Image 1 (cartoon, rainbow, N blue to C red):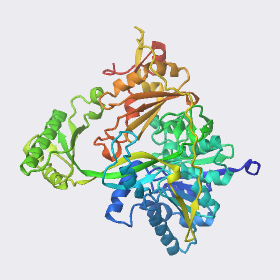
Image 2: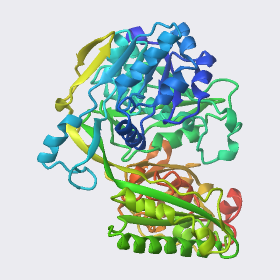
Image 3: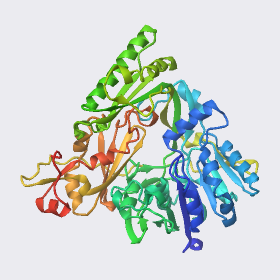
Image 4: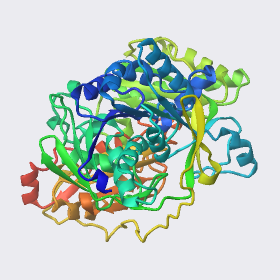
Length: 607
């Protein structure tokens, strides 16, 4: 470790998902601030999309934006400046991605050593797993028949080995999002598989930047404080050998690097903060601290690590029929009521037509009225909305049935509600319904390979695990809270920041107190029971609360919260991105003097 003392490795996060902005890579490379450029593309939803794409064209299955948008614009500068690139853009076809990038480099006359990490594709094991009775780790359902693909979430050590072998660019298939950052840090600082605290710190660094501009003010609760959205900066982390790092952004860019926004990102899409399970390490983020150390500079420290588990999580995708989504605009008095009646009529009519055609009923139907705050359920304040969008979603085993449904959307424009219109009254198209199936697989059964310079070599990683959960019970409800007679209700947003995300059918909401004195008030009233009651119209499973003292925060994990989540969900918000915003509107009782300090009580209709 002596050789790396004082060394700083600078990594820029250029992509948070497939579809992130084309401005990120040129901005980061042009800043002159980075040694590594990393791209994260692979949400669970993305894997389903890639599986569908490859089923239509075997040459696809990777994030094409990585080559056509991300690298094409910066490849010459990356090569000239010696910047290394790491990306999981390979998806379910990493060799195809590498070939496309190699072709681009040849066309531009640039010499590029591209390494490919393989082994995450475990599809060939599916028949044996099905025969052995493999079940989904969340639902307990048996392994479906029509599996499109199955990929294990690999770790960072294969990436580090590729860099050590001299790769300029490392392309992986499915790995955990943070691995594209942890891999370079392992390589640069010589961290070993048993440096658990350091691996946890490096994983946290990757976790903070894996969603791009979410670390530089994107999605921040106090969005009004974030300037120049159009020119928002993408994150640069300055990492040290002891695992500490500073989050920054290129000079002259928009956005802001704020401690509160970074804290939101630390809690984003994690479950138990004492045991955030990754392939290389189990992370304990309970005592992580963030601190403003300058304008647009936030220091992060305090992650602890525990031995990893002996298994990889595997995400499989399968086809479960088809889905069609029809939309209409309805304007005028009682627009929401007219929209709900229209949606019911469309479903009733098409069910009759399906029966006449000898086809089975829809496997699922869903009606939402956008503009009437239907997702808020009993908390809606839309009142007599006069302009709404009707959204009708149906699933069916066969495409023929959905063709009938699609044909019957447009007739609503002349048949039923006055004020029915829309920017386009054409027929919607049916699309394959791709769902996910998750399970674990022993690491010993996954063979990882590295391809570089036309040669393949085996990659050895630690497989024994050793994780033993520490004593860390979730924070339970206390006695039922009864507000003082003089208490005034204010929205939670006056007391806290929050951010929400998803893992399959689970949503998490990280809630960070704005001041230390606010945390006891929040914990007293924002309990698992009260949050479960607030989201009773959306959440059918348990709600668990975990404490995060280092951030003066708590993290809520809401089970069975997203109607299946991802592509399986029929909701307008299948990923739970809006749930924190909904919770921040929850009334919290505070003393009158504190309410005055915070800017007054809620307006009419809040209590």
